[in-house]
Image 1 (cartoon, rainbow, N blue to C red):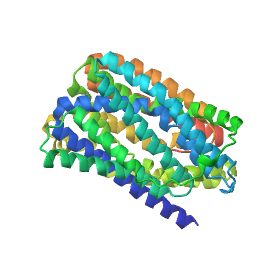
Image 2: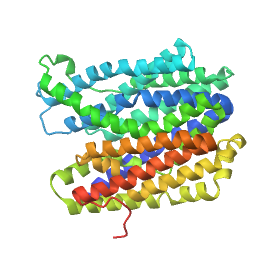
Image 3: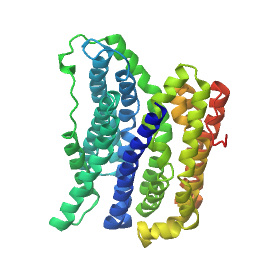
Image 4: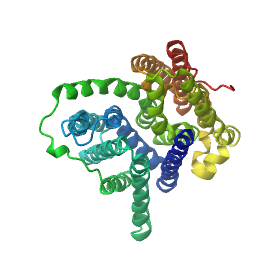
Length: 420
């Protein structure tokens, strides 16, 4: 059973690694094709998408997975399973409205066209629906299939679209045409899903469950908003208040350091239900053993990448993204430090969510976000992109260190790197 579990972890990890590598490769390709200025504008638009989509992909998928993984019989059409699928669809449609308004307001602030707003809004809605369908597949035990369709298929179709545009039609890509190709890839990906359920036969909706699930989304959304929007806010502000090239420098550095936490991120989808299971059954020793092993694996497989970024960052940026990005070396080094601390402290966010510490996680994320904003606006005035890199590092280090201490004092589990 243990070997089967770890085999499942590494299978899931392989799929995640491929998906993340494809995303990183897309950044490299676009950085070279578009150039610094146009890529900076593209990165700014994608950061807007990443921020607007936060309420749509944080909370709904987790609740769907949790409910579908329960032991209720699938044949019972009035069960929580079918209710949660119907709820996820209707609540997703409801949340699309404020997300679209966010895009419109941002477009008005930037002075961009309504056509661009429509493109960005459609990307957000389509991508959120992909996540929802992926959650349904994951909850039904088809984890690898779900991850393949959510993380790999869209990127393959995106590369195919880029190749057709550039090689077949000799198109000169800009940020708008690139976003249109990405949107087309997302829409096409929906046709790869085969989610079979009898939701449309459900007549008696459980309003109390709908209300409970809707309220449960809030903590997930706010924690994700504080944690995930830090990078995107930095890119957006640099792109709008300073130069697009500054946004491009920060964007390629953020994409690069994401490779450091590849090991930790790749196993989250498999390990999360196991953490919840061990915690709910009060098997603290087994939970500690699992967290210790996962933290070790995540840290040691990342050492080669950390070494390259610390000692050969300029060469890496020049070789991978192009000579125009060599000046992002210092930004890359600072962000690398923050991710090293992230690895050392362990999967604190995951443990907090699976062990019922969402409210405490929300408080810590809120405080660290305030620190980020304060230091960000002060340091960017003196150091430009480097200033935002420092403020991002402060945010990551503060939230992870404090959360690891809170987890230990609350449930007695040490998430940080240990030799025992």
